[in-house]
Image 1 (cartoon, rainbow, N blue to C red):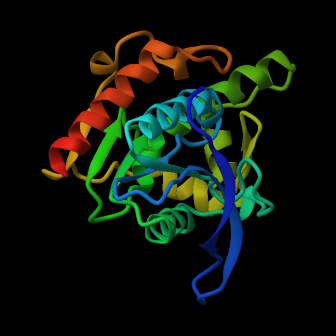
Image 2: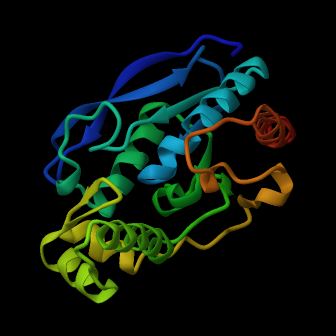
Length: 234
């Protein structure tokens, strides 16, 4: 990996009363004018694509573009309980990260598109809405419960998720998050937000692989699209 990254802390909103808590972010930051906020996918897809995203950031560093990948509260190094997180809180967190790191563009990946700050130009990479995210995780729980000899129906899982929260694919989803995801649509694409599909990047999507993986050709392609566009827009 080229470039030099580091971990820093940033003030993330903690509720609606103006309080903040420290969260971590991985950054390639040399104080340059072009600055990209990377919003990761949600839940397990964040693990599967993290290596790719860090490599994309390293390539952008070589193209004189700073980049930041913040932790979502409740994920990675965060000490916040995941079960208490809400989609509204995550959106507020990404908006705060954009301001704190002075982002000039945003790359929102998969379910991260649900958290894209309003008014910030950039890209949605293969965006995924809330119902699709939940369907995949509920399906995994149905399979696991059947294999454990304690089968559950989709209706039972969804009812529990709405009422009290539920563990899906190892992630403890609170009732507020579950309900919000059931109705969460990807924000409309405006002229300043471009859609990046997998065909443009090439290769088999990393989120479909059984384990976290990495493809340097995909990192090259994704970084090239962003770097070229940011130079043209400068």
